[in-house]
Length: 176
Image (cartoon, rainbow, N blue to C red):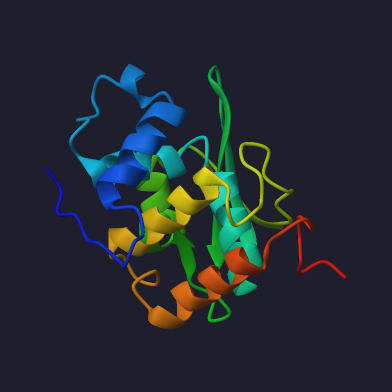
C-alpha cells in the first residue's frame, strides 16, 4: 500500500484513489494494483482525465495548457494534455515532466512523431466547476497528497485552493 499523507480535513490519497478507481472504471485494468494509490491516480490522469486536470491547473495557476498528440499507423491517434509553467517546464499528475518522459509513459517508439501544441482546454464535462463538486475536490486532494513537485509547493497549492474557492455560479472566473 502507498503511504498516505493528510492535509487538515482533506480527503486522503486513498480516498482520491478509490474515487478515481471507480469513476474512471480502472477495475478493467488488470495490470493495475487496486492498493497502489499513486498508480491509480497516475493512470486516471494520464488517460481519460488529463484534460480536466490540465484545465484546473491552467485556470488556477495561469499556466499554458499544452497538448502532446500523435498518430500511430494502423492503430489511431492519441493525446496527453499537460501545463507549461512560465519557466517553460511541463507538468502533469506525475509532477514535473518533459516530452521524453511522456513518450516513455505511452510507449511511443522513435518512429512515432509527436507534436506539442498550446491549447485552450474547454470547461470540464466530467464535473461541475464548483467548490462543492466531489470530483473537483478529489482532484485537489490527489494533487496535495501525491507529494510531487510542483504540487508540493505551498504557493502552487494555495493558488489552486484560491481558484477552487472562487468558483461558484460562474463557471470560469478567469474569463473577462
